[in-house]
Length: 267
Length: 314
Image (cartoon, rainbow over all chains, first blue to last red; front, side, top):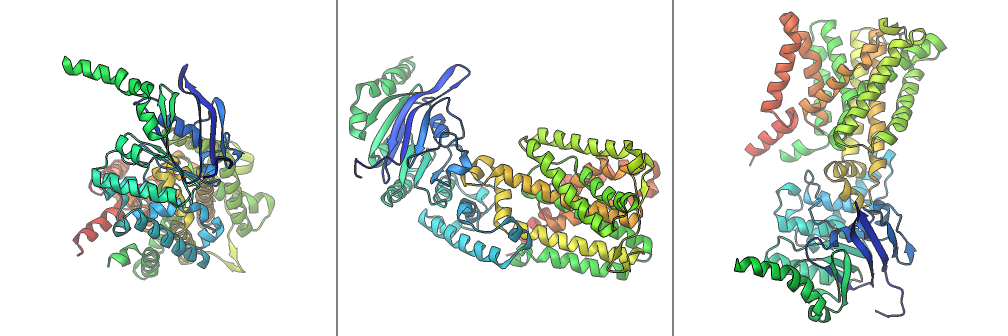
């Protein structure tokens, strides 16, 4: 990582309000290629909203998003994938009526080169494309450890497997930056460790990873830098160790919520 | 066995086999005409299978496109002196263009709202066909001139049987082609999650629009064949009840199943003919039978039976 190089993702002063409530307010951060950047914060801090702003599901009322130097603030979500941005969802967005491998094949859509007319006429090029896409999808399933379940209906897969399936589908777009919204939520220790290794391997391959995660052990272990959000605003940013010792962060996590929980525990 | 059940060509071969067998066992030309009607309505419903079954978008006005295709074949030769075959093609093109124009704004709507908007479209088409008496003959409809295919005048039940069967086979092949292609994957994906499909780089609105246009072209071709075969067309062809019937065919047969759609069409075309014995209770018995089918085969005929068979196979 050379500091002189422009960041891959540059989010500056981004914000959005819902009915007068500033869900995300004046948030800025930069992520470099090959870096694992985590966003943490108490529930309702605006983490997923921030993701939706960065990936274009919401249009920010303030601020800008730049990817590889290009302003993509107003670019539609499906076009952001073309510039190298892929994501997973907090609430699983799986194609439940398709098989596992088909889910990943959909993720390959951008690399597919058949026209609508060719698809309609069933030209040989379509079947060649299907074979290529399926091979790529199978390789990705192998990578996330789901090769054995390739032809199982996605609806029949356990929760932890679906989380990894979403990552495989996002990777199918060959992204430069991968945004993961709570990839380890609801996963057991073994599954969390598998996701941990996967994220590290993806980042090692030069992909920037932006992570929302509640599992602090995972965050502290794999993050290069951490951004703490509280009530839609950035509270602290820096190396995991520094952030963990930041008094404001401790207050946000323990002082506010923690003291209330402590009160309740004491009746 | 499972591979056979899942193969792309199985429904096509099964369909071709049935098509070849029916003329051997059909006792009269009346039965052949009913069979031809099944093929034609199945063709119209196949378009909806692509739109509803693959992409999950409801259209309650699809008979409107059927009406456009039918009246193109009726009006073109009668009022403009055009060749009926050319009019069949023009009707399909016109329906596709109308679907494009109508679909762009309304496919932004979802679920109930899309259903109501398409319903409105169907009502408008039926209304225009009713009231533009000079052009369409109004509620009494108009006569349709005979079709000549490369110098061969298509008349008689058996000839129409083969023409409609051929059209349906082509339609089924194209629908199966789409299902097995990247486009089909994109449509099925946006059916389950539009946000995830967009996240994979799929232009969701463009794909929905493509499915809507294809569905409209299917319905228009079916409408054109219907008008030419019957030699008469009335605004009834574009009626709301026809739109609902098309949707029912797709659902009874099994959402997304090509062979199922043909079964659904057979069910809804043949059954009313056999239920005439019930006289004024015909509609009630038909409704009851549909309810029984949906209760016992909730996924539709073909998917439910396939699941049953696959369960019993090792």
